Length: 182
Image (cartoon, rainbow, N blue to C red; front, side, top):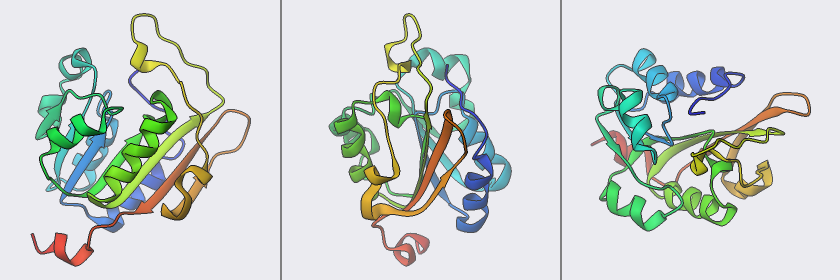
């Protein structure tokens, strides 16, 4: 199930419009939803992606949507670090990916990405149990809340109901002026 609900897409598109990123990293690209939104709203943005499932990379043509796609397990921060090779991004997207990682690995990934971006957008579901035969990376294995982002969370968003989506926009550690000059 490499897709996600669209309940909070307007938050992401508003961030794209305001931040006007020139480099975007989509963590757990799936079908490429966030890459397509970025392509349509900021066509000059260089898009990069990480997707653990090589079948999805081929099946959804991610190589045509993103400049580079790395087939790396996001739970392995050192492998992510090696793949990125020191790259920095205006915007990192974690769309419906954190719940697929062990909690400790997700926290490590958030901290790692905070040092490599100006902005981070994360969205995740609450209340959905997901298991997909033959796709262990698709299972929901951790629960997340706003408190997991602590002081990082700049803005928080939520839909209503027992089954809902939560999202945060967080300001990364990179100097906004320094990245703009690149």
